[in-house]
Structures are given as structure tokens and as C-alpha cells.
Image (cartoon, rainbow, N blue to C red; front, top):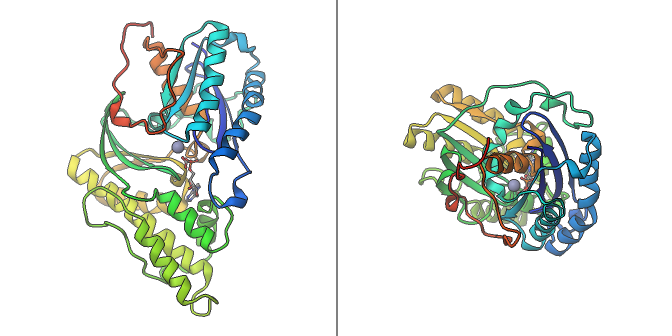
Length: 359
Ligand code: KG4
Ligand code: ZN
């Protein structure tokens, strides 16, 4: 089944075609938010509307297909910004209705959970127009049970995956998401939004241990908290407005260290508590070099396996939506064309697909 995936939950406009072995994928990060220090919902919706059809046309052209070749449509229905979700969701419904093919409303977080398997299912990697050379070649991934940390600008959730559709939340953030904290702190220092990638880059050439910022809830359960870190950095900045006692890049390096150490500590604690020793990490912050380094070091030391997706699939993308959508569609699951956008759609409300269809 050739499935068109559509993603528009936040500030990434993305489409993908996936038939079980071949993938063509395009994603555009909206530029309109840079000047505002965060995603502006109204601007996101308008930009999705401007970009989405062109991106769908690009993937069909790259595939060498016609839109009429699409046999199923999967679009993100939540969680995310409601106006942004409505754009992709309704374009998806329109295409499904026009072509008279099945439609599926996909949970965005379920996409993140399974993105580490994408590389394994892609056999035809010489796809013309595939912009991600890393997609080429296969790598080991794992089957459930595994733990998954979804860590981005909107989410910080630690999930136990027992099967496809069987998810238990072990911990989540009580305030800011990890990426959100990095982005907001970056704004305090005049960095462009999103600041995470720039903090990552600057931290490679600055002093790692200069400041000891708080590690929120480090030794307390599996929930996360990053607002204390934000406050501590603000106070630090007020006390040294001119940057006399601290170089900006050293401060940002210490911020990154505080965030990544907490993430890795929680992964290790979850492994210890559950006895599940396979962990996948996904979401935009999973692209962070220091997080990868710390997690891999800890995994080796504690005897668990940690897997990061290719960087191109860390951030929001329609490839993961096409992948989980196709898995449910081929199992016979369908959504009505009245399926609503669900800005607060929780992972734990999902269930396995009903297996009455043809695989
Ligand atoms: O998954 P994503 O594209 O969108 C959502 O927020 O759902 O993630 C974007 C987030 C931003 O907060 C961005 O600063 C962060 O991921 N990010 C990074 C890196 N690349 C992206 N944070 C740290 N290091 C990176 N290399
Ligand atoms: Zn996401």
C-alpha cells in the first residue's frame, strides 16, 4: 500500500510517500518564527497552508508517481497546535476523499516512538530525490519491549513500549520541555530560535564545567522539570549583565550539560526500574551531540542499548507519520473523515490496531 504521510503539528511542514520498502520524504522548517523567539501559532498555520501542497507535489514528483497512485493517507491529528494540525489533517482528508482511499488520523508521538525502525524497513534506499544520505543502508533496531524518550521543543516523555499501540508513560515534564528550555534560554542570550542546534554547536568549542546549574528532579522519580534551570540562568545573567565574569558560550555549555545529564540520568533510572534494557531516543533534542555522547557512555557502563535515529528524523517529519500510519492502515484500521484535530492527544489513550485487514 502506497501511503502519503502528512505532518503539520508545529513548525515543520512535511510530506512523505512510503510503500513498505521505499521512502521519499521532504520537510521544511518554517522560517517565519525566527524573529519571534518561539513558534507563533497563527503564523505556523498560515505557513503550513502556503507550503503543504507544494511539498506533497514534490514528493510525488520525486517518487515518479501521480497523486492518483496513492492508496492511503495518514495525517498527524495531534498532539500539537490546533490551527497547524487542522491544515495537514484537512488536506489529508481532502486527498483521501478525492481519491476514495482509506484515511488515518495519526498520533504524532507514536511516530516518534517508532522512527528508529525506519532505516530497517527501507530497502530501496537509492530513492531518487531522497535528501538524506543517512537513510541509505540498514542498521539494527529493536522490537518491543523497549523504552523511548521523546524529547523535543514540545515534549519530554519517557515511555515504555510493550507492543505496537501499547504504551505506558513512565515520566513526563512538569513544566517546560527540554528543547523549550534550551530555546528560551537561548533567547535570553540573543540566539535565534530554535536555539538548541546553536547551543550544541557552541558547546563544542567552549568550557564544559564552568557553571553548576541546577539539575531539576535529577534524583526524584521519572518526571522532569526544567523551569528551575531557566530561572537560575536568568538570575545568573542579571548578576553578570556585561558578561564580565562569564563568557556567554561557557554559560550555554553548562546549560546544555545540565539538561543532557538529567535526560541520561532518567533513562538509566527507567532501565533500572523496569528491567527493560533497550532505549530509543527521538525528537529534535535527540540530535544533540552531547546527549548522544553521554547516553552512549552510560549505556556501555550500565549494560543497556541506546538507539538514536538519523539526525534528519529526530526533528518532526512525515516519514514517521507515513510509517506508523501505514502500519495501522495495512492492519485494517481506518479513521472517519470527521476525525478531529486533538491538540492534547495522549499516547496512553492509543491501542493496538484491529487486525482484520490484509497486511
Ligand atoms: O521535534 P522538533 O522538530 O519539534 C518539536 O518541538 O516538536 O524539535 C525541535 C526542538 C527545538 O527545541 C530545538 O531547539 C531542539 O529540538 N533541537 C536541539 C538540537 N536540534 C534541535 N536541541 C539540542 N541540540 C540539537 N542539536
Ligand atoms: Zn515532535
